[in-house]
Length: 192
Image 1 (cartoon, one colour):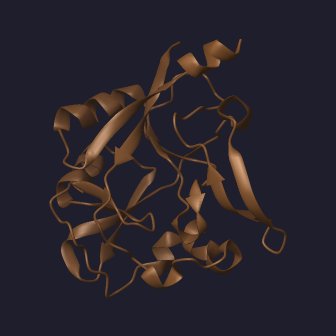
Image 2 (cartoon, one colour):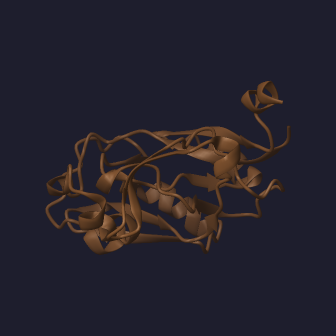
C-alpha cells in the first residue's frame, strides 16, 4: 500500500455557473461537461468568496489569485485559468493532464446509458480514487478520465503528485483538503 498522489477535495461555494442545465439529460449538456471553459456564464454570481479554491454545484472549479499564482510560480503547465466576467479576483481552473481510473478495482456504477451520445447520465464511485497506473504520479495536476456525478454536474476528480500535494498542504489553501491516492486500499484487502 504505497502513496502515489493525492486527490483534491474541494468544498462547494454554494453557487451555480449554469443553473438552467439542472436536470437536463446528459446528451443535451455533454458539451458543458466536456468543455466547461466554453460555458462561463457572464452573469455568474459567486455566493461564497472566502475560499482559495471552491467548486460550483455544476462542477466549475473557481480559484483565487493566490491559488493561480501558486500554480504559475511552480510552472504547472497542465493547468489553465480563465477570467470570470464579474470577478477580477477569481478564475475558472481547467486541468488538461489525464489519468485513467481502474474501474474494476473501484467497482464503479453506471446508470441510465444514452446511446444517442454514448454516455451515462450518472456515474458513481469516485472515492477513493483507484488509478490503473500504480506508480507515483509525475509532477503536476491531473484529472480522471471519467466524469463522476449526474448530468451537467458530472466532473472528473482532480489529482496531484505527492510533492505537489505536500506543497498544497503547506500553503494551507482555504476550501481544499487532500485525500491519499494509494496503490491499494483496505477495502481491497478484505476482498482477497
